[in-house]
Image (cartoon, rainbow, N blue to C red):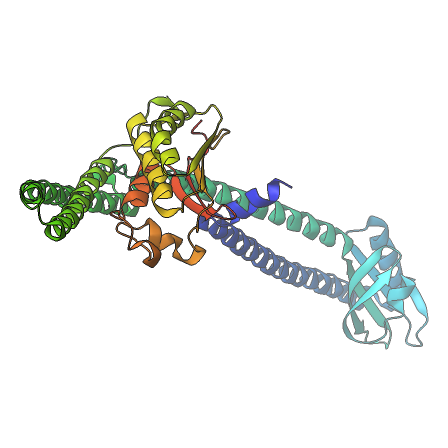
Length: 448
């Protein structure tokens, strides 16, 4: 049943649906053309047969006038032997058959009709002779019908060939267009991963079409977005750097003030609180600088051992975690991914610090690496977790939930981890650890 989803994906392509519509239109057009052609040929053939029958009837009328009624049966018999495609019927004034086919001799009604004889269907014309007798001349339709059927088959074959040629040409043109659209889609996918240095292919201006114009507009948009992001990143970095200097000076003054007020406990405690607040502000600016640096990097290409990175970070933070009254477990499977060791280590450290900050004493924290075609780096805890409705908000920069507003932190830890995941072509996923929170960096398929 694998063909079912593939066919559905193929049918979702606009080009396939247009081809199907074109095929239906072509088949309908060729069908109607063939039907009209057959009707026209039938009418022309019938007109020709009527003319032939009328000519043969006039010839027999002339024979009757020159040689008399008694010679007409002999003439009909002779012409039947020589057979030129005509059928005859002759009846006396009393209605008795005098020659020809009995079925035609029995047609004693003037005008055109269709009768069936031993040889098949016949288009017949019947007239009253001057002596009161009846003369019928007909043309056998079998030969004409065979010719018409052969012509119809030829028209159908020509129509099928025409449909096949048109659809093949349209399919090749559509496949060529799909290739260019796929190139544009691939470029857009790279941009979605943070690659602002890529550009959509554009043909020569002399032969450009609407797809080239779309690619050109897309590239111009990327140029503008790149300039805006570079400018925003530069301004953000400059502001963060510029603000750190006066903040550090204030911090140093607070430290001197704290030493000077050691003899006044109340004032010293207030100064200590101010110093903690300033440290949090400085950490926020550090996180902003780090986020700007991560977003400015390209997707890494070198291979790293995800399990080794996870083990190194976990062992580095284990003393702090266990000293806080929490436990740390690791379940690491070997998984080599295209990644940046420093960025992955920083992302995991942020996730562990986030778990340490938002879980009560006695909680269990676990680090896990899952191998496979799409590796995953997970951090689980059995703390309060994050409700599903608030997880998207928690991933946004400065996205702090009400329950965590009284705890230290900048609100950038998950945002930095999410940015690292994006730089590796993956995504950061928040889930339910039952109880607690599960945070996973999910790498794309084929990353291992």
